[in-house]
Length: 334
Image (cartoon, rainbow, N blue to C red; front, top):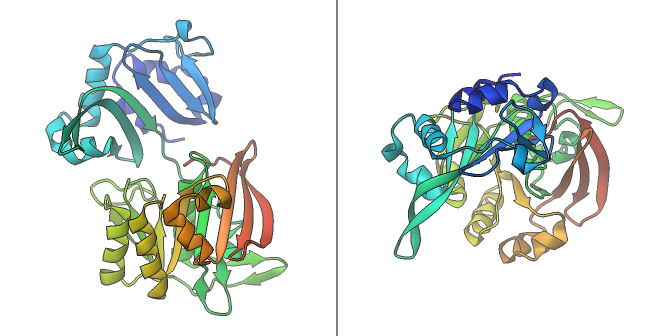
């Protein structure tokens, strides 16, 4: 496993992480560093505190406690010694570093006109380790393709946070862009069309893991990425300038997101989007998404859930009729 993300941590945290049991290290998803409070690790969706020896413990009093000197060094490292160049990232509350790893930040906000201007006195860090799992979309991709029209079905993927939505989007982009062969039932069919043009609107730099605009993950040979751009604006920019066959966007939910999705659908561009929610009932409670659902703008719904074996998928068509329930093995991060 590529563990270069460990290099961003100052000592002694870097050494502690290196001493973690290998099986735990392979499953690390988040490392939470809170000044003056126990160091916490999320591995395989299970939370552990970490001792000074790098051993997991359930007792906070046994855990390593990072102090101000360590958190200041961490902030210096992740900002490449130039915190003043990260004004926009500090306003949004996260920084993306090479490899597509995202670091959430917590501290004291400075307001201007009632809006967050930037973040200061930063004392909390949530390092989300990004991984790609190629092939994770295999069980569901055939059901997202309309062989008659030659299009990708408009698709909404739903789940609570950290169930694997972003990982799934990443593999869907790669496979649709590649034009993979697809196994549908007992028939082996060629993809809808080979080498579809994919446009990714990646507001948080998580799907493609871009660093300075260049994707760190394999999102396919005919994929364009609008990185660090608000979703609604990014979708419209893609439609105007890049003529995608498929638009991929993560975590829609605001009214302007819904409007941009409808613009894309009416322009004949397929949309694959994700949203936070356990099921359609939860999504329908959000006004921006309710319109998209009640007007049956999506032709496929994918409900996913983390399991001990990987991912569990439930699929339905635009009229909420069930299509398939299947599982994919392997890790599911995102």
